[in-house]
Length: 330
Image (cartoon, rainbow, N blue to C red; front, side, top):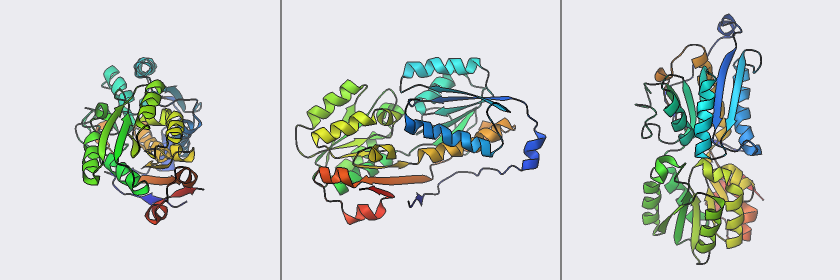
């Protein structure tokens, strides 16, 4: 499978010698992990595995010199807040935080314990860091997606489904960056350029997803964009099912959705970003400060096309999409 790499990182990850690691001794350290996703989801587990494997490569073994405490919030903001307090009570040396609402819950509880975030879209706007180059506080990490991606997703959707004249963008205001406002300007600008009617589709539950998609699918010419938000990954199975039932061409921000029956996806390689977080956790455990570790931009993106789903929707996939796809599911 071909991968395209977009180099946009700020700063670099320092290399640590084996000798230096050995000199650190075997003192047990505590690492907290708070993830927005559902711990029963096999795809979500691969993200955590990427992080733990990368830590092992850096010399950290759970049970030997590291004690890892993992919590899964399954998209529930109240659960995030409860687990944030729970993890802080364990007095961790550093916390890995996934998503904007999770990071906000942790920041509410501490301004001193180091936090490395992944899956945060707008860390400056959210008040997590003062700048990308010099975060300045107890947080640093890895940006998930820049705001322009929402417009890019709509462009790709209309390329594969040129009959789309109304485009909805689905998101959960409780968990999306800026309650959705971070991505909406890019989406609206792309819709205007493409002469497509933009429709905001805020939803909070399976029932609301189903109700919206039933209503939206009654008229022809509709297409759906999934906002880059953990909610869309957690609820992907229902969105995929409803999109098929209602005949709605849909583009997703997570590759798992296309692999499981969605039409097409384009977004960040999530396993990669969890792996990239491990060296930052390592550096903090060895004495560096989050304030001095620059926030990094995403570097690996992938497009996955489900040709079987396209055929079921009566779509002829253009050669331009086939040539750019990193993976095509027949």
